[in-house]
Image: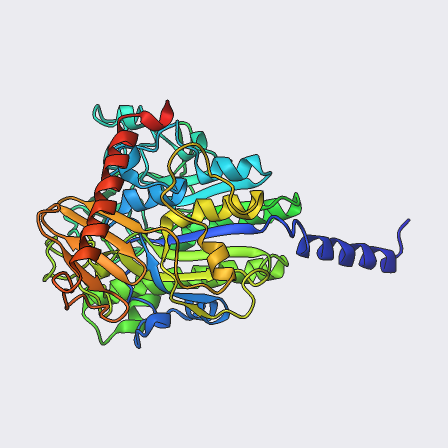
Length: 480
């Protein structure tokens, strides 16, 4: 029979074991907001939005001045984060296009191979989740059946996912005559005839739709699944990957009164927009508190970013919705800085020392190669297929602000190439180019193309070679 002292010692020993578990295999949490602008967070200087949890993580970790999404819309950025490869290589050039192909090696599959337990929570948007039931944009529809590619078939042990967007409050329902931007939450005395199913569902496995705990803040609905997953991983002494891909603040934005009341001096649309961001921030704070209680915060790599810049009302650059791109030109669907430079944090107390801020250009394609080199050694190839990212984590740890690889873009009729401080940009698919120095001129107002024609030519040739490489990839050359 164990004495109380013996039980206490065993408990302390177990807690110490959990705290030091797998020091060579840090946990990875990748939090992705949806359509969150660079200027929509306190840690980037927004003086009225309330994001205390994110601000604290940015203050304690590394605030990334130049965190880039790999595309100006949702799906291709998510594809790049999952594979380290640009979505043009495997048929995901825009949102609701293509799917994550089975020939690709996902971040989940890679970390599974290294003993991680893996979970994906929130928005998937890399293919459909059902072949039999009408769901979201493409699920169960004739044109979507061939794009069935759920996370449980791509390296994730646990899933709680939607194909695409949902409202940021009561995510399964909407008013009958719902606008596209925002609405007030359903009240207890509301007429049920005035509300209907939103049409996008949460899936947990093949033909498995979640039916419980789906009310209130959607960010909380997601985090209610993330926390138990992490608890189980720690109890089983397994390193974990948690992809936490919030829907916030993608339209339609809906927030409860406890959040809209924080912004009572703004318009109703803005109240819901910023209210949904604060509700998301609250759940990020909840996640950190749980990691600290489990002794896992120090050995967890936490990456926070957005999939692109803020939304627009009519898809033009001069009719913004509520979000802010800060001082930058462009918004969602534009590969100017405002469309692809997004709020970014990298936190890893055990690995990043006292570094607090970095001007290193960090792009979503960097996540997989960074983990490959961390777990398998410097210089390790992420695979036989071309990888567009680089090991940015090692660059951060060394304090470097220049990256060895360029960041290429192709989106609709736009082309761009970022080479550290220089950015080549075309809005007519390469007929003409402008050259910006986005360190000296982050607002992209001064064109240096006439002053540096040789640099323009070298960057243009590099971009053309990359485009030819993506065309070979899209034709299946990488899989042979």
